Structures are given as C-alpha cells and as structure tokens.
Image 1 (cartoon, rainbow, N blue to C red):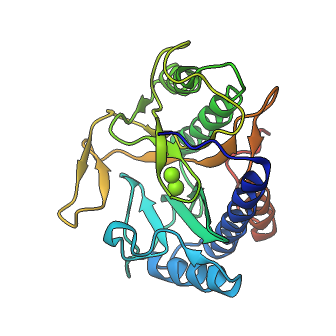
Image 2 (image 1 turned 90 degrees about the vertical axis):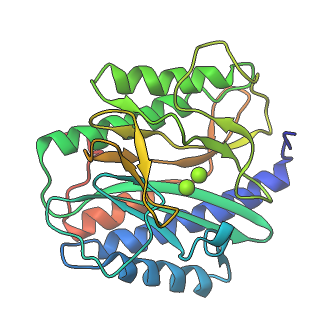
Length: 267
Ligand code: MG
Ligand code: MG
C-alpha cells in the first residue's frame, strides 16, 4: 500500500534529507587517496548523532554501518572496512538518516584523486540519468516515465542499467512502496500523484547489467567486475514540478573547497 504524505510530513522528510546531504558533504571533505572507508563511516555516524538523528542504515536488516560505501565494481551495499581508497577509484556513498520519525536517503558517487575520462563520463551520465528521471516526477505522469528516462539516457551512452535493485518510497520507513525501477516503459506503472515521496536511484554499469553478491550477504558487484556508479535523491512528486528534498549543493561546495574535481560541472 502506498502512503501519500501531507505537507507537514514532506517538510519532515525534507529535514531528514537535508541532514543526509550535509552528512555526504562531510564525507566529501574527507574523500582522498589513503582514507579508509571505515574512517568515512565514522565521520558520518558522528555527524548524524551530533545532529540528534540516527543513522538510518545501521542495524537495518542487520547492516553493520552508517554508510554503504561502494568502490569501483561494487554497485551498492558495500560495508565500510579498513581498506583504503586509491587514486583513480570511484566510490558510491549512500546514506540514510532517521530524524523526527522520518527517513531521508541520498547517494553520490565521488572521484578519488584523478580518474580516467571513461569514469568521468560514467559519473556524469549516471548523474544526468537521475536528474532527467526525477524531472518526470509530476502529478499525472507515470512511474514508467521516470524509469524509461533513466534507462534511455544510460543505454544511449552505451552503459547498462542494473535490474535487481530499485528505488523506493520513503517516509516513516526507509523502504516503502512503490518500487521505482531504473528501466521501464513510458506511460506504464503507477500514476504519479502529489504527496508521493520516493527515492530515485539509478545504478549504472560501464559493462554488463548483471550483478553478483559477495559472501558477506551485502556487497553487490558487477558480474564483469567493471565499474558502476550510483546517484540518489529523495523527492516529492509535485503538481507542475518535482520537489527535490535532498540536495547535492553541500557536496559540490565541499568538493570545490577541496579543490577536488567534481564530475557534474558541465565545463
Ligand atoms: Mg540510499
Ligand atoms: Mg534508497
């Protein structure tokens, strides 16, 4: 069953989503070759608790950490560890928080140091897929319009779309109905209505679309071990225009002050 949100509930989800955005900016400030994914996780957990919220992922179905940190061929659900990031890596960082009874959920894929032109293109296209997809989140459109826009924009660039993992409703629960696939057909699926709050999260692979899971029961990798990127926003369907509840604004500011290369400046 889908729970449509009223205006107050949407504002609470916005607050949670903005805290996620600021947490990802703390991570952005610290991403560099040599830092471990566990160090990033500690930074995020401290920041979230200092802001009187709870990490949304920690303990969720037994997940052991605050962040999902997924480098290179890891698509999503990477468990933070002592493994260090290296120059030339890409790393998806996914974060959820619980604040005032509501979740927010957002993810960003970072470049570590200097990355290849091919990886820059993968990041840029995946980010574009997210932004083009969420533009369709307007009252009267269909869920399939979002899905199709993501798939079309990934595949026209020669990349592939993960099928097994999807976006989702967000609210009092981290994962609610409906599922939001990153592939599909225009005009199909749920008709979008104001009050629907969803996380849209394209996972786009450089190589084949197929994935495998590690023995840890969490880590999802590409079957061909080629890199994968992931961007996510929590959004509310609007009457004439999508209302993006999370933001990458703080991340972009952090990356600029780092003198880091952000993938989404359009030069
Ligand atoms: Mg997420
Ligand atoms: Mg999500």
